[in-house]
Image (cartoon, rainbow, N blue to C red; front, side, top):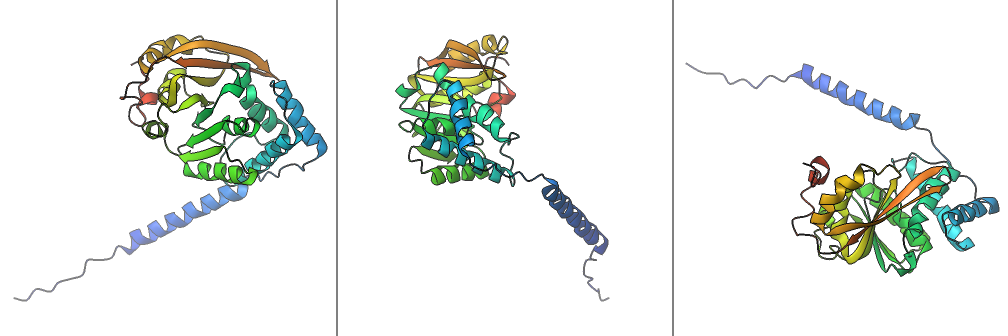
Length: 284
């Protein structure tokens, strides 16, 4: 008895459904792009440059016209790139200057920034606070670390456009970067404006700090719970809270937490990706 082999039946119905679904997904993506409001940077005027200088002065730092022009070009690139990728929700010129540039430069409220030789910004995002610090303090060697490569490409574009020779942009998660021999316990100062709680931030950031160096966290004034909760983690990681500088910048209430690195961070920290946020050290 002969047996006739049949080809498996093609499920044309499912293929058409998949194709239709792909088309709908593509159309939705295109619609989102087309619906996004495109923002155009304001024109550079003497008034705009003067506004940058006066706003930065309110943060406690006097800058030259040349430096203000660099910050203005940074603003232009930020807005232009933000039209095609999510870098910041703040795009209004005056808000960028005050909430990003001036706020980044308030580090001088908490320490003598001129004495910093090397600095790393962990989870830098669109470059805050690291890039404004690098622009205004060109003698500091600044490293910017972010987990998204597209953001790192933006940062590198700003660095190249402004001719910043003191800045390196690195694509890495904090947990990975802290295990690199060239980055671990290699910096005088670590900064972060990330929104994570202080316990989690400390595990991400303290491994980068040299012994006797500092980790400085930019925060709001609401630290009543965060500081006590972070005490055990700081002890484990080799740090101690040295001081909290609280101040008002324009309409914003701000704090900078200064954590001194007294001893080396044990090699087991930071833990593997995701653990510092999912299970904060000393709280679980």
